[in-house]
Each structure stands twice: as structure tokens, then as C-alpha cells.
Image (tube, rainbow, N blue to C red; front, side, top):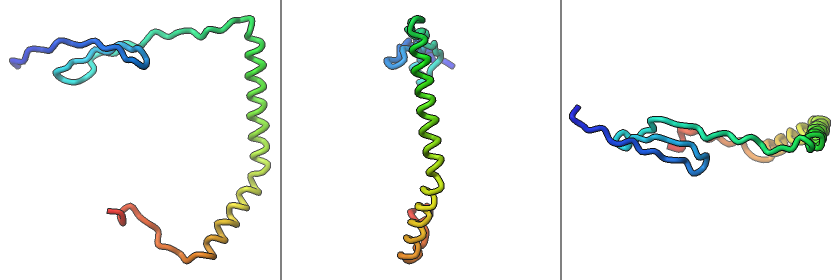
Length: 102
């Protein structure tokens, strides 16, 4: 009880620029103040171009996922055949457990 409270140190985070208040005696953060949020710099005249670009990106992702889904059955069957061939070639090994590593 006779301890004198240490002065609180204010620190600014170099990454996010948040302000932290730290008690050096306890080595803990006492308070945190989030950095101010900066609004994105978007020109409204470019909004149409930005929306078209986002729509094209969505369409491209959908097309890629559609192609992947069409080939999914072939990919899975080929993976199964490879695993089956590997299982037939080599002898069955005892599985390694975490307990065995100690």
C-alpha cells in the first residue's frame, strides 16, 4: 500500500497511430484511443467506372467458380485413383501420433 503510483506513459503506435496509456509499474495498457478514421478519397464522377469494374470482377469470379465446379467431379475421381494406387503400392504404415513424438 505504501507504493507511489508511477506516472502513466502515453505512447503512439507506429503502425495504426492509436494512442495508448501505459502504466510502467504494472506493465499494462490503461487506456486506448483509436486513431481517427480517414474517409476514402473517391471522386463521385468516377463512381460509374468503379461500379463497372466491381461488376466485372464479380462476374469473373463467378465464371471461375463455375468452371471449377464443372471439373470438380473429374478432379476428385483422379485424386481418389491416385490415392488408391498409392495405397496398393506401399505397405500400410502405422499412423504417427502426437504421443509417439514425445
